[in-house]
Image (cartoon, rainbow, N blue to C red):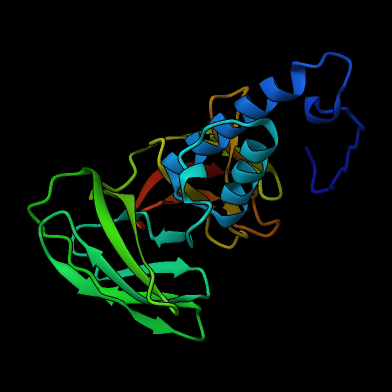
Amino acid sequence: YGANTIDLARTVSLPEFDDTHAHLPRLWARARIDALLREMNLNGEREDYISEIIRLSQRYKLVTPYTAFLAAPRSLLRPRLIQPGDPVIRVKTDPSITSVFAVLPFGETLPLKYLPEAQVWETRFLAPAWMPDGTYRCRLLLGDQRGNAYQESKSFVVDSHAPRLTISVAPQAVRAGDEVLVKVAADGDTARLVAKLHGARPVQLYWSDSDRMSVGRLRVPAGLPAGRYVLTVSAEDFAHNQSSAETRLEIR
């Protein structure tokens, strides 16, 4: 548990490449596709995940939500998680696309403008404040260089609630130069947690399967005078809602 970095490596044979039992690769591919779909349903679409899903579905003849779009350019809706009032919606498309319109769930249709430097289509998008949190669908209307038209349905999540946090530190009384174990229980859509203490380097917390919460180790500065200090944990979720929580730490 020091500051040293340890790299461990082991060679394994994944079922996709295992021909011991003929049915294993297809079972593994189905499980892998399901896992990627769950990840994108939670955190939004990713090009590398979609490409892997299409590759596996073609190889093992599996039906997925993306196999129907193999003959048409694909698009990615970003961000997928938004705050009410969030003014920007971005769509990444195939280079052949020359126009994009978004048909929003509350009836508004908006043209998107292409931004060459970012290689995305963008428009101002105001989610009404009265829209309750939840999952919504919008339609993207795409046109290409040859005059072909395509339509895709994409989902996005309206999230107005900042992450809720519960902090625990051990030990609660330490000496200057000691290390403090910080554990935080946070909402499941929390994307980033950072612990801060006066004079110390901020520490990002990461999920621990064994602890069932996010964990990090913060080093108390060696020259910090004795006293009671505030340890702050700041949080940000995937919709960029932010919150923070505090606890007291005694330096002896």
